[in-house]
Length: 100
Ligand SMILES: [Zn+2]
Image (tube, rainbow, N blue to C red; front, side, top):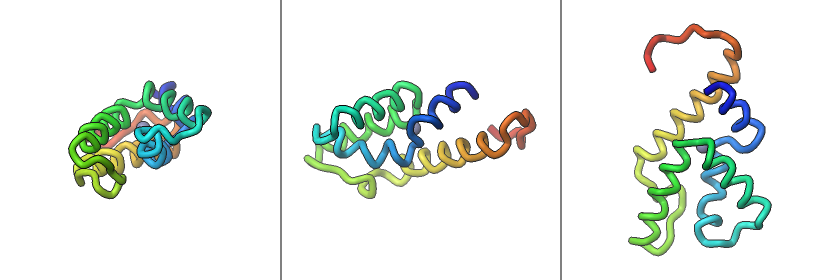
């Protein structure tokens, strides 16, 4: 899992991925950026789920901005991001709050 986060860190963090998602879904992303985003999605369950939600929302509304997403979806990403930050900062430290 930590290895996954390492790969993720080199590539994109979730905020970057989310910022690219609207363009991705509209097909206006460059092929290079699309490849990076797809690599992130393959490694990040949170963003994969987020993208799935965006797809559904777009089907209903026609278009969606990150701000339009459900607060819960954004909270999930914030949580992922904070967990990512914590992983980076406590690199190698196995101790946690026990609240996972
Ligand atoms: Zn992600």
